[in-house]
Image (tube, rainbow, N blue to C red; front, side, top):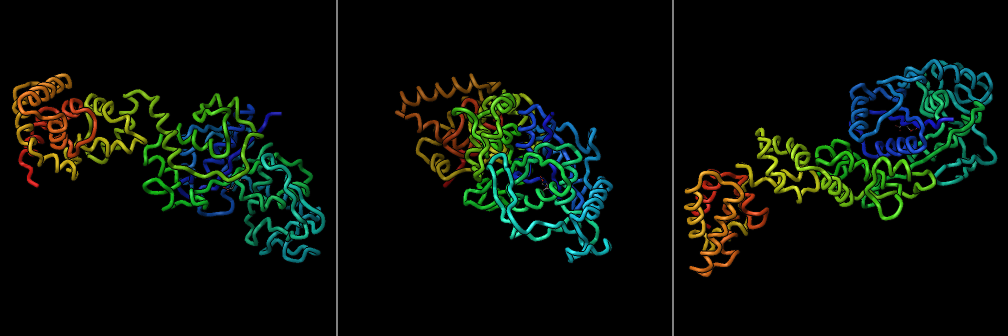
Length: 457
Ligand code: GLU
């Protein structure tokens, strides 16, 4: 029998990373077992589940590299894949439960009231125990004396998750229900529902919670988060310029430990190594530093051209100008080692843009040093004489100044390079000067050197 996994979101807005974590594990387990991965939109209990939010969910899954074999957009043999369209089968089950005495309308368990304006309740046993056999945690025992009869359908006729999701999972042949740990508490209802219907239970897989570094559940807006905005919406990751593969990889580490020390894993490793028995039951802590480390590992594998295209939208947006391919490529090779995410490119490359020039305190100090004016004047004279400022030319000009400056005036390297850096970039640290000069180009470099000479503390 083919294993069938599903992801059953109720999308009400921009997808949250916790939801996508559930989707990713369900998908990974399906792929590991050579099974099907089904997408079902659960919209029966809320009017807030809109087509736009559903599309955002599909887009987020696609961005992460999660594909599905059946779903609302592509159909399949077990459709429809939108829960509200499955009402006839929900209704059939309701009728059967009432007819067989497992459920009743109203609040008198001994006597079912009229379906109109009354909720439907499932009889829950009051003695003994209900055992949830969770594939990650093992058996969990619930004392039936604590049970209350569970509402399956609201008095306005809308079926709740406890009914709709169970019927859909059964009818769609789902063999493995992968969902968040928060569903453990209501699992006795689901188990009793399956028992009442005489259906074999699926394999229950409750994924651990993800917590922030203070041990709290992740929320949409989390000032404690750790990234600049602290958000856990998928757009927060996209806007910060994380690579989808890195987010994919990092999310897998929240609840799973790959073999050996290897933390950078590809789809094939996941297929070979990910096993239900290896998943962790304890909550995982979301660690932004670790995510950035993973992101860097993926960034390092990319070609300069790919990184250039990655930072392009961030630079073009902030500096509001279209960028020449070759120029951007040169800039990228100069700054890429400092990138943790693509968005970091905005700060790392600031010096290369007219708007980005900002004089730091150490930069200002370098411009007021005793060597600043003669060094800058000398460089201006040298640059004025050349036609094209490429890296090799810049290198040889700087070397000449360095050697003769030392021989004639006793200048040390920092006496020369720090005022030049400060004039060109605003700071005394950064990429190699020849690269900076060739990226700025002759005219810009001359302009900045002239401003540097004029600078007064
Ligand atoms: N629609 C439910 C939710 O988004 C699905 C839970 C489940 O996976 O069973 O929370």
